[in-house]
Length: 109
Image (cartoon, rainbow, N blue to C red; front, side, top):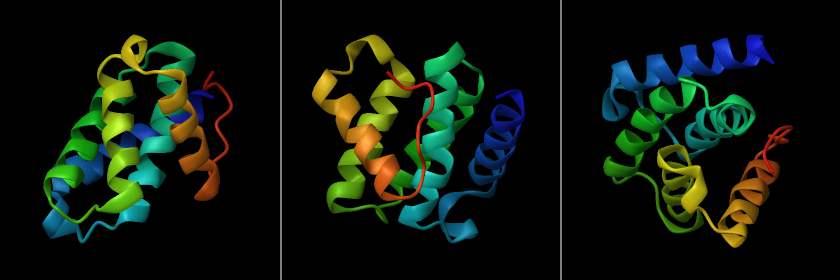
Protein backbone atom coordinates (compact mmCIF):
# COMPACT_ATOMS: atom_id res chain seq x y z
CA UNK A 1 0.00 0.00 0.00
CA UNK A 2 2.68 2.54 0.92
CA UNK A 3 4.49 1.90 -2.36
CA UNK A 4 1.28 2.70 -4.29
CA UNK A 5 0.84 5.88 -2.27
CA UNK A 6 4.37 7.02 -3.05
CA UNK A 7 3.97 6.22 -6.74
CA UNK A 8 0.59 7.95 -6.93
CA UNK A 9 2.02 10.97 -5.15
CA UNK A 10 4.96 11.16 -7.50
CA UNK A 11 2.78 10.87 -10.58
CA UNK A 12 0.30 13.42 -9.29
CA UNK A 13 3.10 15.78 -8.35
CA UNK A 14 4.69 15.58 -11.76
CA UNK A 15 1.36 16.20 -13.45
CA UNK A 16 0.58 19.13 -11.18
CA UNK A 17 3.97 20.75 -11.65
CA UNK A 18 4.05 20.18 -15.39
CA UNK A 19 0.76 21.90 -16.13
CA UNK A 20 -1.97 20.25 -18.13
CA UNK A 21 -1.44 21.85 -21.50
CA UNK A 22 2.34 21.54 -21.31
CA UNK A 23 2.26 17.89 -20.28
CA UNK A 24 -0.25 16.92 -22.99
CA UNK A 25 -2.53 15.25 -20.47
CA UNK A 26 -5.36 13.06 -21.63
CA UNK A 27 -8.61 11.94 -20.07
CA UNK A 28 -6.94 8.61 -19.30
CA UNK A 29 -4.45 10.51 -17.13
CA UNK A 30 -7.33 11.53 -14.87
CA UNK A 31 -7.96 7.87 -14.09
CA UNK A 32 -4.26 6.98 -13.83
CA UNK A 33 -3.77 9.69 -11.22
CA UNK A 34 -7.20 9.82 -9.65
CA UNK A 35 -7.95 6.16 -8.98
CA UNK A 36 -4.83 5.36 -6.91
CA UNK A 37 -5.20 8.65 -5.05
CA UNK A 38 -8.88 7.98 -4.28
CA UNK A 39 -7.96 4.53 -3.02
CA UNK A 40 -5.15 5.95 -0.85
CA UNK A 41 -7.40 8.64 0.61
CA UNK A 42 -10.11 6.08 1.34
CA UNK A 43 -7.54 3.99 3.23
CA UNK A 44 -5.78 6.69 5.21
CA UNK A 45 -6.73 10.25 4.33
CA UNK A 46 -3.33 10.56 2.68
CA UNK A 47 -1.52 13.73 1.62
CA UNK A 48 -1.44 12.18 -1.85
CA UNK A 49 -5.08 13.20 -2.13
CA UNK A 50 -4.19 16.89 -1.91
CA UNK A 51 -1.61 16.55 -4.65
CA UNK A 52 -3.99 14.55 -6.85
CA UNK A 53 -6.75 17.06 -6.12
CA UNK A 54 -4.61 19.86 -7.54
CA UNK A 55 -3.79 17.77 -10.62
CA UNK A 56 -7.41 16.81 -11.27
CA UNK A 57 -8.58 20.40 -10.79
CA UNK A 58 -5.99 21.53 -13.31
CA UNK A 59 -7.07 18.84 -15.78
CA UNK A 60 -10.75 19.77 -15.32
CA UNK A 61 -10.00 23.46 -15.81
CA UNK A 62 -8.00 22.77 -18.97
CA UNK A 63 -11.22 22.01 -20.86
CA UNK A 64 -9.85 18.74 -22.24
CA UNK A 65 -12.21 16.57 -20.17
CA UNK A 66 -15.81 16.23 -21.37
CA UNK A 67 -18.86 14.01 -20.98
CA UNK A 68 -18.77 11.09 -18.55
CA UNK A 69 -15.10 11.66 -17.82
CA UNK A 70 -15.79 15.24 -16.75
CA UNK A 71 -18.53 14.01 -14.44
CA UNK A 72 -16.11 11.44 -12.98
CA UNK A 73 -13.40 14.08 -12.50
CA UNK A 74 -15.88 16.42 -10.79
CA UNK A 75 -17.00 13.68 -8.38
CA UNK A 76 -13.39 12.60 -7.75
CA UNK A 77 -12.52 16.22 -6.92
CA UNK A 78 -15.49 16.37 -4.56
CA UNK A 79 -14.36 13.16 -2.83
CA UNK A 80 -10.77 14.35 -2.49
CA UNK A 81 -12.03 17.66 -1.08
CA UNK A 82 -14.52 16.20 1.41
CA UNK A 83 -15.24 12.45 1.28
CA UNK A 84 -18.14 12.75 3.72
CA UNK A 85 -20.15 14.84 1.24
CA UNK A 86 -20.07 12.26 -1.56
CA UNK A 87 -23.28 10.26 -2.00
CA UNK A 88 -23.34 6.48 -2.40
CA UNK A 89 -24.43 6.97 -6.03
CA UNK A 90 -21.39 9.14 -6.70
CA UNK A 91 -19.10 6.65 -4.93
CA UNK A 92 -20.47 4.02 -7.32
CA UNK A 93 -19.70 6.36 -10.23
CA UNK A 94 -16.09 6.60 -8.98
CA UNK A 95 -15.75 2.82 -8.56
CA UNK A 96 -17.31 2.12 -11.96
CA UNK A 97 -15.14 4.73 -13.71
CA UNK A 98 -11.97 3.33 -12.21
CA UNK A 99 -12.96 -0.25 -13.07
CA UNK A 100 -13.81 0.73 -16.65
CA UNK A 101 -10.29 2.15 -17.01
CA UNK A 102 -8.52 -0.86 -15.49
CA UNK A 103 -8.12 0.38 -11.92
CA UNK A 104 -9.65 -1.80 -9.21
CA UNK A 105 -10.06 0.12 -5.96
CA UNK A 106 -9.01 -1.92 -2.92
CA UNK A 107 -9.89 0.47 -0.09
CA UNK A 108 -12.74 2.49 -1.50
CA UNK A 109 -15.98 1.77 0.37
